[in-house]
Length: 256
Length: 325
Image (cartoon, rainbow over all chains, first blue to last red; front, side, top):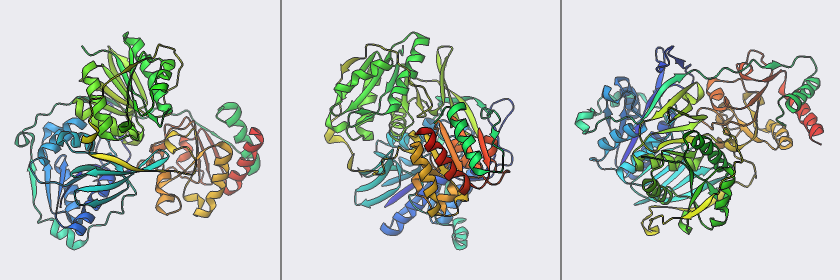
């Protein structure tokens, strides 16, 4: 089975995000970069499929030089090879431009299933997997917590509001991973050593034959709106404080 | 020339989801600013009877395709039908809900229509005749204003954020041929496993009561559940509580869980790690109950009580029960 997982390098969830004073983006000094957590579930699920069914697993990532760290992490976990799309032309790429580059890198290699994270925790756009599926003309199943592959099809669990769906899809397909799909493994020391020797092909826009056409542009980045300072309900008696809170919610906030 | 503000309405088994009315009301407001009509696409099975209801919230024309293949929702059937209709009619703006269905469908449409989209917006407006969408990024640690340099300009709206406004229009129902061959579909829903708790999903809840590490163990959530029952609220949890195995994955609020925006969010024993604040920061009112007065959650709370939650929460339940009686 030929498995592909797309990964993105993002700021760690504990990172404080600082907006540049001119609103042109975020200040990335001091950011700790990690593999997008949802992509990690995609890497782990790909590895489990490979271990069960045999085959080869390729990691594809678009990003600057540092993105190679996330590719190496996935290789250390057990993936076989990487493709690193690295070209300053992709700075500011939106979901469509990103998916176009990924599709160009993937279309000429064999694939049976492609995993992506359900969204990246930096821009939170959650579009790339679906656009990639469209560009490759294959089905998508997004935000997935369980998958069973059976020959040329897969049965997949997708939670929605108030229910979960059991979906059957033909393969190849793009599947986007949600938390709950699995517990990603840690890379072992021998895995890390081996990863250094695994091949990573570097591609740029020209070699992929794509031009970067950004359609959705962040014209301004702003800090979150300030919240008015809150009210701390004082006193020694928990019951009296609870009573005051109930009153404020009812009479002042009018939310109950 | 692209013209018209369109929405893709969302329904299940013949009942509209509330987000459909939020979409219609928002589209009406935008359309009035640029002097255009509001169109809605409605797909489902046995839904012709409900289509006109969208007129009440400002929709001029409802394009309906009624077919068994549209219920339950699958990406391929819906995306093919909507994309075909949109290409024929060329609206300037296309809005969907940032619900699980809307997120899935909208992203596929971006691919089919080769356009751009702002996801999970909390504000949309018209500036110089074009859509300008405001959306949280980094799970709300900052916000981006997004402009789309292609048509249709697409955006998904975060549920529970945009007001529902009655603004009666004709809601003329127009049937259209979806042009989709059911035999060509590559995915199908083979089972719908309904959540039997009867609770509203966190992303759609008006009130959420959440418990974190301060709950000390899964057995103590009974006091959270009692408070939630009195309020008609849904129970949430922090990542710490989920990772400890106290609560199911689906209850997690935060950057790697659900992004929620209820009217009232009550955080019990939650310190307010940045990744949790990111997931609930757009709640209208935030209450924090925590014995550590230094907990970062208090900096975000509208109302705070610094005390032992095991003493405060049962009293709060009692008081609210009295108030609502």
